[in-house]
Length: 207
Image 1 (cartoon, rainbow, N blue to C red):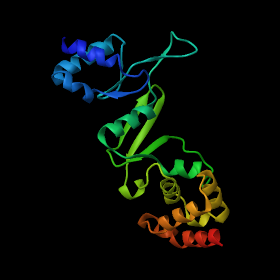
Image 2: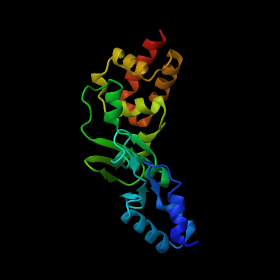
Image 3: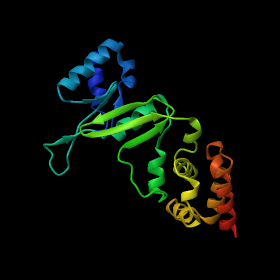
């Protein structure tokens, strides 16, 4: 079986609408032969190149099967980060808005990462990835991480106890869990300016 056939067979097993990296195909032949096979599949509209080294099998739109969709810019950014082992979290302004700490929604979709800064585009959708300090990327996927990123872009003077209670509610934290999160955050260097306020909130919550 030729490299082109092996690549085609594996592509046909990839889930539609989910981006994938070409790196997983290099075991099937030389880099040049795999790249040529991918290029032929892209020209034949079997796959679509969504970023350098990343492709997707178009997915028919459920309501109009003749129209095919690919992937969102966010999906491509997430697959890129996973492929290279980078951390990827929503920017602090997004976290602050979702927690009710700020009222203005971010205009742009921006992620923070320990990987290189770059931009992903899919049609009119644009996602920016910005390299940032590891200290602001802690606890990815955890409530304390979301609160950390929300606080780091918010002034302590603008937040009162009711705001923190609202954020705790949105994070679905119990009283014990919230106290544990607040204690953790008081020890984080990037929130040094928040330390007194966080300790105050902890006392109020515990009382």
